[in-house]
Length: 258
Image 1: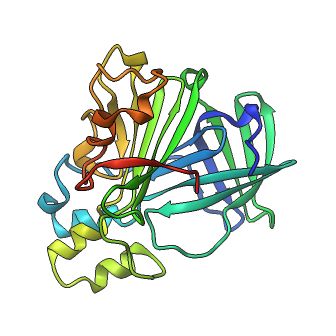
Image 2: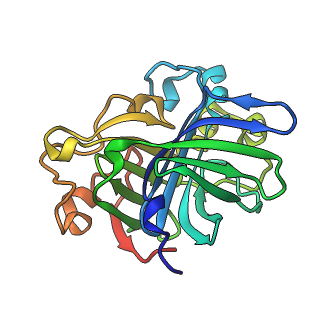
């Protein structure tokens, strides 16, 4: 699969989604980080929750987390058609295509329209996301089917990791949540991490500003001594053994793009 055009690279923040049904949303925090091949997308509704672990949240607070979205994989662009091939997903896999028609209003403003014109979205590129663009797909050392990625764009990073225990099929996470028999089960349903933040070129710890895990917000993905521009960052055992909240027993290893 070829690389995406240079003009797509960076972090895009959604300003607005408008559907033909009349629904619109400008409140959900939506970030799409695009590298030459890999992407990750994080969507957190405006519903602040306390910075507690999943186990410490109330049942209603955990249920609110079911509305989050996040996914990662590989992007393919053909003329003005952009398709995101999701290889890991916060929600149950639906099989629906994620595809849109793209139009650049300016270099830093992108309009996405559904092929059937059922919605349009306005995306703005974050200025500090220009610079180096790098991404690495990951596999758990002890369980290769468990996947993740670490993506870098300018001053920003996105880390994504699938659950230690995969989801059963379902139409929506809320459906699986309602069928769970214990608080331990509901917590495991939510143990998919997508964390987004800034590293300030290694001058400060990699601070997480937005995450599917409320306890991670304001915390650090990696210490400041980890240079985001180091050529061997993805071969650094200290990095691969410490990424994320639910770290595999043997850490992560680099894997080919999915």
